[in-house]
Image (cartoon, rainbow, N blue to C red; front, side, top):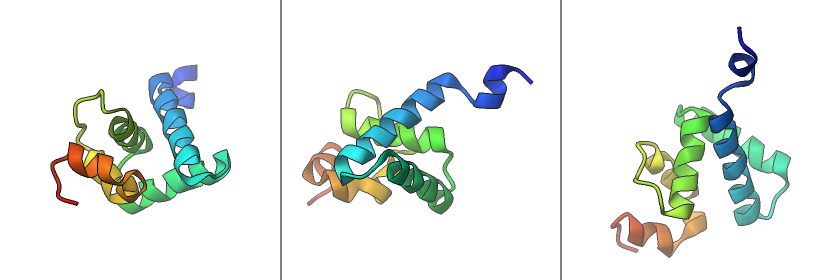
Length: 93
């Protein structure tokens, strides 16, 4: 198995790191706590860590087209982003 195969996709790892940073900022928590929260969300939703992280990053930056897993990210963290997520996704407050 290649080095990349053992360590995972570098692009996926980057988006996971960004998502962890987002959670740290939103929650005011440590890197380990944010990572643990992402892992718990993966277990709860059944969505892979890279896909769930991509959904969270897409919610925050708004520059990406909606990903298939943004609804899982909204369900898990939408309350942390309040009005901005509701308006962008067409939901009523």
